[in-house]
Length: 254
Ligand SMILES: [Zn+2]
Image (cartoon, rainbow, N blue to C red):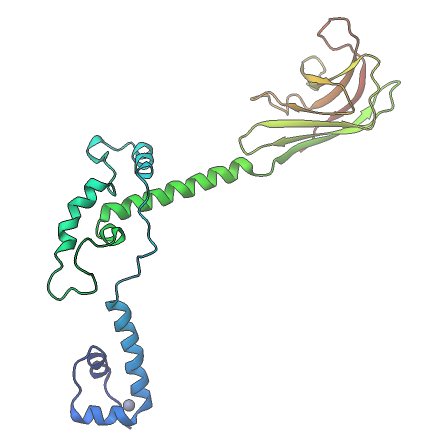
């Protein structure tokens, strides 16, 4: 069977008339009929305005935020979706051209006016980028801390406590060391230190009154230069230096 050529099918789908022979063929050919139906769906989709009823105009604060974030000039300070700008476009919408149908007379929905303003889409796109960036920042800030290093803490001299130290980094880059011992053995009070391998330089992280504690690592402190975690037994003598009595000690490894 000789089918209708694609051009004839396309024109017929666009409501151009078929000649008598073509009409006759179409009545008896399911394949060409199916092809026309498919083309008609495409034509219908192309001719139908998208449903924009769900679009809502954002508040003036949205544009103010975009304007501020992008550092735009005074000339575009006014909200492009504000009442003034809507009035600008209203006459165009109130006088539909001949053949334009589907819109009742009078002011169209704001969403239609919105569609016709490219700057609005630009603003909406910019807002979407800002929202996405905000989400990324928020996710980073709430991301689970990452473990940078840890150490097993072993007792020294007359002590028997053991434990561990773990350094984690939060999404904002701050570092925390968590020290856990199986018991608190100090006669005075426990103080937590980071010490250089040669044992001459040391940084006090703070007091630990129980068997565990969390301490901030000073920003910028190179842990590889101070890898030894030490918990000392400090007498209440008012001397801020290390007492030289260490309860446990261990070396951080990543
Ligand atoms: Zn056919």
